[in-house]
Length: 232
Image 1 (cartoon, rainbow, N blue to C red):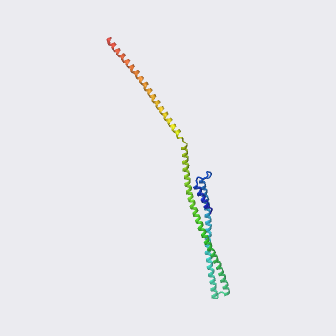
Image 2: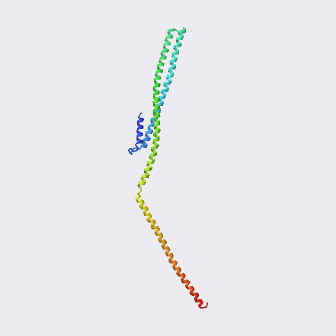
Image 3: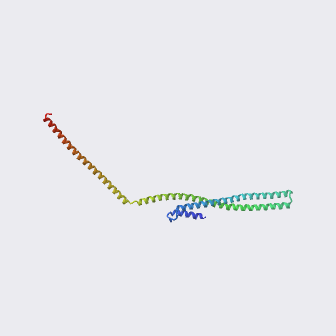
């Protein structure tokens, strides 16, 4: 059967996953499985037909055997009638002979049916073997297809991730980080500078307030001394 050739082609397509880019291994495998299922349907139909012929041959054999036995019995009954004087010997012999001829004809049908039974039995056995092998291969390739699809998903995801990682320029990233560090350091230094300026401004104000407070205290002392001189 060319199904085994197709099975080989499907297996080869799955095994050589790096074939021409115009051919998709998954689609090829799916098509191969669909073809096998179509062949399985045809094989089952053929098996059913051969089984039907086998059953028919068995029924025919049983029927012909029964008829042969019946004609044998009839021939014996006719001869018994001749023996009893119930039937003329000439007629008895003629009818008994005809019954035996019918018996032989049915025996020949029995032999033919027996040969057909043997032939159909061999065909049924062969077809059943092919059907079982086909079912097994379909199950096997369906499992292989599931594995192949999973592998394709993983490989695609890995490829995309690696592609993204490869697109990243590590040197430019490091330079960008160094620039950010430098900018942050400048901002921190600038903040410290503004803090120092603010502290310096507060120190000058404090000195001014201290001087003013000293002058005010001296004027108060002079006023008190003057009051004492004047007796106030």
